[in-house]
Every structure is written in C-alpha cells, then in structure tokens.
Length: 438
Image 1 (cartoon, rainbow, N blue to C red):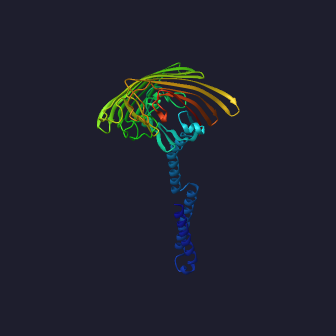
Image 2: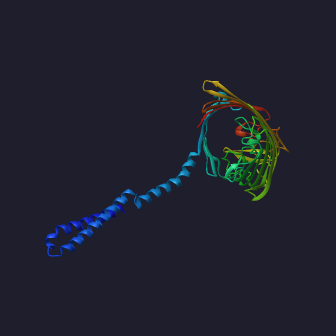
Image 3: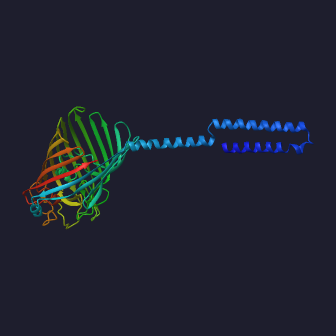
C-alpha cells in the first residue's frame, strides 16, 4: 500500500510539472480555466500527501498482517516450547565387574570387567498429555524397556497406552538392591507389557487396572521384563492379559508409611507350535514400608501356567520357558514365591561422597511338583532339585552423579540365571557396577 501511494504521488507531481512547463504553449487558452485546472491538481496532490503521511504514521495493512502472522506463530509454538521445557532427558552409562566362583577363567584372572549398559530416557508432559520412554543398550543387544503415551484425565486419573509397567506386586522394582529377586527374575515384579493401563489415586488408596494385548513387542527374549518366549523351543507367549492392583498406605504424608497391596493378573497362554491356547494366572500380596532411613519390602506370590505344549517336547511340562536380556531359562509352571528386602540409607559428608546405601534381598521359590532349572547337561529341565534360593547383600556409594554398587550374590539352584550352576550347592558371584547418571 505504501509503495502504491508513492507511485500515485509521483504521477501527480509529474503531471503538475508537465503542465507548468507547457504553459507558454497554452497561452491562447483561457487563463482562468488553466488556473482552475492547476488549483484542482494542487488540491489532489495535497490530499495524496495527507494520505501518505497518515499511512506512514499507521502500520500498513501488509505490515499489520505480518505482525498478526508472527503473533499467531508465536502462540502456536508457545505450548510446544513449554512442552520442551517440561521434558526431562536422562540417562546412565555403566560398567560391570564380575567374579563368579564357579568360573575357572574368573578364578585364573580375578574376574572380568565389561560394558554394562547405556540408558537413554525421556519423560515429559504437554498440557494434559504425558509421555515417556526408556531405551537401553547392552553388550550385543538393545531394546525398548518402556515407551508410552498418557493422558491426565483428571487430578486423580491417568491413562497410559504402550509398553507400560504391569501393576503387580510391590512397585516399582519389587527389590531394594541391584541384582533383583526370584519373583523379579520370573517376571512378577518390574515387568513391562504392551497394552493400556488406568491409574487412579484417591487419598491413601491407589488402584490400577490394565489390559495387555501381548507380553512384549515381539516374540524374542531381548527385553527387560521376563515373560514366556514365543520363539523358544517350548513356544508359549502370554496374550490378552488382564491385571489389577489395589494398595492402601498407612501414615501417608509422613516419614513413616506402610503400604499394603493386593494384585492379580491372568489370561491367555498361546502356543505358537500347537496353535492352541492354555491359561495362566498370578496373585500377590505385598508390603512396602518406609520408616525414616529404613526401607522394607515383603511379597508372597502364587501362580500357575497351564500350557498346551507340543507332544514329546524337549522342555519339561513342569517348567515354563521364559526369557529376558537375550537369555532363556526355566521356572516352575506352578508354585509360590516369597521375597523379603531390607535397606538403610545414610547421608554422609565425606568429601564428594554424599550417601551410603546398604541392602539385602532374599527370595525363595516353592515349586509344586518336580522342577529342575535348565543346564548344559539338562537343557529341558527334567528331574527335580531343591527349592531355589537367592540372596543379594551389598551397598551403594553415591557421589554427585557418580555411583558404585557392590553386591555379593549367593544362590542355590536359582533358575540357572546367567549361567550359575544348579547342582544343589551354594554359589557366589561378586559384582561391582560403576557408572554415572545424567
């Protein structure tokens, strides 16, 4: 608009100049008529100059439109910027040192040190929309531990869809140390499944309900939580599972709290080789106590897998083949599991060291019927062994973003996890983990 006004003003000035220079040639015309035309042109030029000044004092329409578009763009991106500000990126880099008393190479070399893991996680919110994921890299494999999209339906209600933690037993881990317990190794604590979950909080009550279409994203064993492995020799996978958990916290809002929880899960157990469906169920009662610097966990779990295995299978029908961390192993198809944990956290001022954390996790499996873990000489788990037991005693040292776990892990027939013998004797693994969080 401003450019067009300048062009009009220039045209008017040009016409005026032309008439002025042509005046001698028009001497024969009526002088008064000429004067009237000149006066009219001058008046027109004055009006145009006034319009131009007004336009210069007020932003042009195109400029106003640009300002409006810029403002609209800023408004559209403001919520996105707020979302980025409300997102938290975190991660972990960890090295692992191990000494196993059953390994001759470890005896000869005083153990080994390897890459432990690299974790990259993101959690955030965008208004009422929530999201989070946790991706992990290990030596030779990687997987998505959890990944979900959520919605804050109300102050007390949240819905999550994706690979979410199963509401079962003591949350979030079910143990207080580093290595874990037999219920965790069996997939009954800190397990993730693919589906939808609803969480409701009302005062001291916490309630969760979930439906899981499948136990994991895929049928392999490269995942965090232990589940039946569809691509294994036995071929079972958990499908269409329902899970529920109810918890009540005594002393909520104080430094001394006791949570009592009840949970159950069950559904279809599909066999990829026979194309037939069995069933499975689990139930647990737990206690989660926090008393100042002291923490305790207690849990009792009962469960059963009723599978439709192939005839003459290479795996015992008294064992369920499950997997996690790229490793398959066997648990009893039916029985009870018990775990007890105790920990103490102590803040210190020792230079850069700011916390010492001491813990002990003990767990025990009582199979129903004959059960033997998988071994190199007996991969199918046929036969019977004494009840599996596992104990993890250790401490954690924290200095700013750096940490170190020191664990002495003793086990007897403990599911053959990561190669430990199941010969009825006690075996010990000493493990240290060094890393930092960011």
